Length: 269
Image (cartoon, rainbow, N blue to C red; front, top):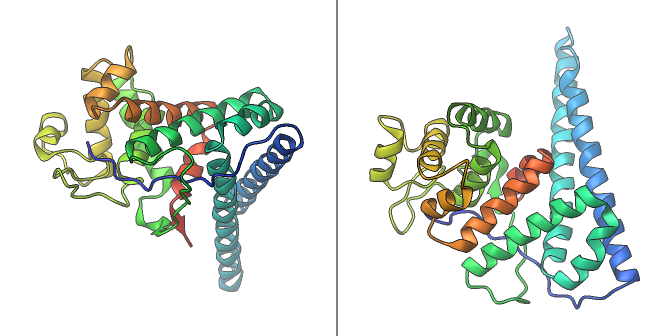
């Protein structure tokens, strides 16, 4: 399978103990709070009943659009901090425990995934790599629809939905970069056509629903859920790839809001 998503980045500041770790932890905590608050604002607006008057309906759509942008902006601001800390393992080791066990574990998993992708890309440790926001968020199916596909495939095969989401992210940035790759892989889960016919049957290789189902079937026939390492390694013959997928999946297992974060990480608007 092809590695199709945008690569994460980091600045290469020198690590430091004590107050620097406290500052980083405080910034990360504030950024996470901002994301949570933005999610709550969007949910509140979505839950409101439709107004009877056309002008009020227009105002409601505008308010929801503004809240959606505020959420995307909060995610991207947090992303900058996550990338930066992920590239400084010494500082991360001092800062993450200050955030509490759950948040520390999530960020450690994400950091491990990011570093594995940098290794796959041949980026030397300490090389500054910055986030790219070159893709439109509307270039993929809505995150709610994708989550439905992951869960439906999970129900049929027993594969944890987070592994399907992680592969979808790494392979194609949720379908925003669906090929063909240099090897000829296509679609949101980056299948070679012959492989897709084996697992996807008469489905559409470019369809998120069909390709996610095919990916779940591939994983289940190659050892998952009993042995995710073996199954993911069959998907892409790279141990760094396995590390990246498992790291992203672990973060989403701890907090499903990471799916929304990853969904907006490469986007603008």
